[in-house]
Amino acid sequence: STPSSEPSSVPSRRPSSTPSSEPSSKHLSSIPSLSEIPSVIFNGNPPSLTPTLPVSNFELYPVGFDAGICARLKDVTKQECLKAALEVGAEMNLNAFLNVGSWDWSPCGCFIYEEILINYKDPSDGNCFAQDDSNLVCRKMISASPSP
Image (tube, rainbow, N blue to C red; front, side, top):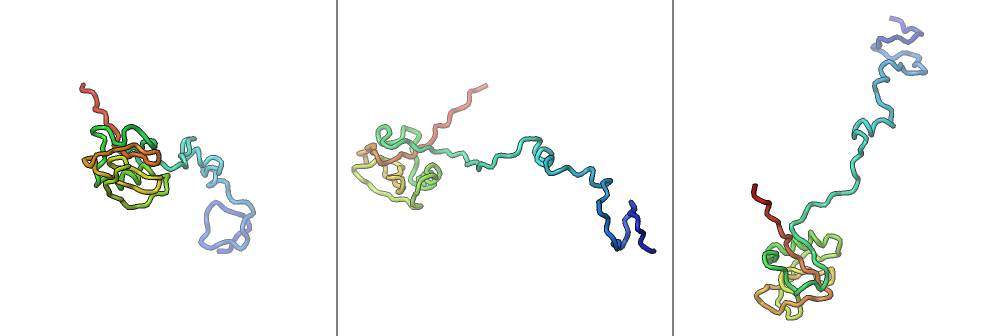
């Protein structure tokens, strides 16, 4: 068949020799404009671009806090210390290894020294001292839900 000079609503198998200057609006009317796309996809509420940090079971105490040891049932074990400190100290420039010692000047348990070193001192060593350059890493207290 010979191509016609007039556009038709029936697509041809071959492209025409002269493309139309205006595409047919018949099929484009159902496509949303660019300004409508966010409201179509997100119902008017685009998602936040701020990353969500996972909830931690641990918390970082302020420097020099309390008696230099976590409260009963809030202590962090040596096995948990590195992971816990990296979680709560994510904004610090921490070394990614655990120092274990029995220093006579330091807090007991898991602590971050000078926002760089992750340390652990066994509480059974005693001599637990709060330090102005150390943050304790303690377990968050999990509250029990009331019984029905």
